[in-house]
Image (cartoon, rainbow, N blue to C red; front, side, top):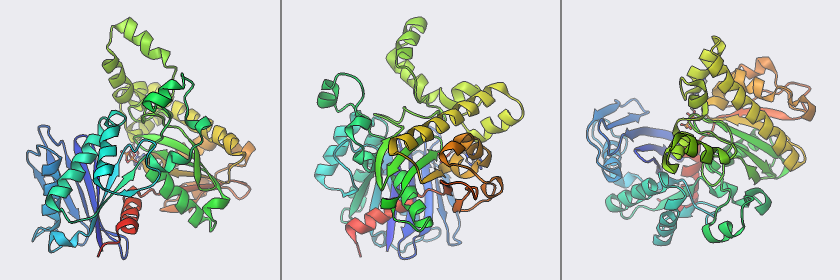
Length: 400
Ligand code: ADP
């Protein structure tokens, strides 16, 4: 049973083909710079077949999907003997609004809903739909599932998702907190419960997904009760290039002072802020952290801001849930940067969170880094959104 997982971005398409009997990746790769000069495609089979990399014009997502399917069934670097051996396709979809609290089989109505939320996910939802339609054209009989980044957060109560602006905006324009990285938070919180040998219903978990985009989620007995991202992924922590939390009056002030348009300010907040904006060097934590350790003041400030916010959200979410049983770190920074983890939970001993420095320096897909005298478990769990998408796709389509 092979499930193809597609993750379409505005100018990229990432994929994994997962064999579900053993949940192993058979091949993965990506098309980059779709519709832009310098487009390239990379296919990496995992079973010893040669890698395949090519630079060629990729005009649109349909062309990218075709490259993926051709590579998967190619006589030299392919991993299936025909496209029919791709039994189902799971699509990561950014925004499902308030309509989807779970993954769904893709129907014309689901496509219509994805289109309806173009306005809330202007870069991703159109790309996601293009990926879906490209598969429909090439593999019209293959079942497909949409897995929404927003779905897991739909359990949030109104007090956590309604903004303090006239309610009419929620009623008329559905302006509210939606939250993102839901598939990762779901995977990681379930994996944390399994790792601890407990039922998710018995745990209050704070999930820290720290990657290029970062968010923290409070999962109270299996249900999200709050999350740091909002209407869009701009709110919350300091990220690679996104500003995260700030007074919205900053927007007006900058527009007036620098005579910028709203589009220019939004680009600044989404693309030029965060680690990049503060460090004035890089959006990549490896560069920023390395330079901070060498004494670079701007980089140190960027790291300090991120750590301050992580600690603040952990404290806030422990308060929201009336306590916490486990804090989980995941994604590129959360899984790899042990020093940052240690610094982020410093001072949280008063709520029982304490990391053991030796355990924290180890590396594993799932590990307990808590000190012996900590009453709260601190874990590191490698996220796997693709596997979660594949599992949902299998459960909903049960193809053969
Ligand atoms: P994305 O949101 O693009 O999926 P990732 O989860 O891959 O992002 O996280 C990217 C971030 O993780 C970058 O800031 C990168 O510097 C950081 N990162 C990745 N590997 C390491 C590492 N070994 N040590 C420290 N930081 C790392």
